[in-house]
Image: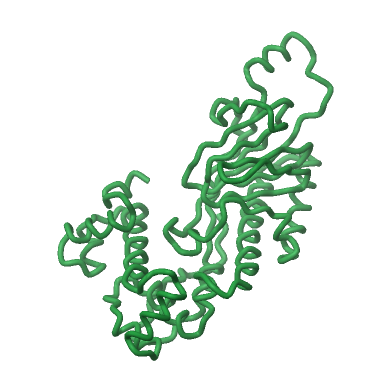
Amino acid sequence: MLDFLSKPFDQVSEAPFAEPPDLLTQILLGLRLDGVEYGRCVLHPPWAIAYPAQRSARFHFVGHGGAWLRTPTTDWQRLNPGDAVLLPHGSFHVLASSPDVAPVDIDSLARQAVAENIFLVDGRNARQTAQAAIAPPPPPAPDVMFCGALRFNLDPLHPLMAMMPEVMMASDLARRDTTVPVLLDAMEREVAQDRMGACAILARLADALAASIIRAWVECSCNNPTGWIAAVRCPRIGKVIAAIHADPERDWNVPLLAELMGASRSGFSESFTRTMGESPARYVAKVKMSQARSWIARDGMRVAVAANRLGYESEASFSRAYKRIIGQPPSTARAV
């Protein structure tokens, strides 16, 4: 797990209008990535692997050889040795030695546990395995990749998560963060040397690299004059957004938020909606439901308790609001 902050970023100030620290900085410092599992994959061409959609992010690093990557919304992209890619939403995608190879599901491949949550993956399909038993393997060297599944401590409904693109290429962001190429070089050396404990070291490097990729992407996004990142950087609107996130249990309404911003009610509502692309009430509701889902899924909190903490008069009214925002009843959060 990678943890950049010694205490949670959502601590609530006791002062009613104490100006909270910069929200974006708090989120980046508090960003945590839990490694669900990692695998060192030895893939013998021709090969193609389909990765089903999942809630955890996917990470891939090319050690030897190369690969092609495709998602439902992007065309084939070439990955060369030393390249890394992060798919923060865990979207369905295919990795292949060539775009014309039919993919097999990742779960169909044989794998051997070498440590907790770390595996060696044999990329040969049943036909290739049978042929290898009869005749020596073909001369071309296999492609070697290090892949992982990572879980963010941010809810998928969080604006920062929602803004992240489907695919983040480390090479595209390396110019923004000098840490990225250093980590890529370190991972490449670990794969090349294939020393004892290499998988465990690669797992820790992957955690750090994923966080660096996100930080570099945020820095790129800060140049955009619109959107959530720009809004939290705005001294006036950013103060409002930070206060909502710092205390989601509070009964935030337009008069209270307008007072915090130092604007009239109509001026505040117009400015907030224009910048954020949604009304203050809608944004507050999303933050509340994101917090509720976290309580229910992570802490096992009862729905009635979450409803009461967030200021809803009844569990039924809370459940209706939750389903309107999340798309599912709150009881489903426990199954996630």
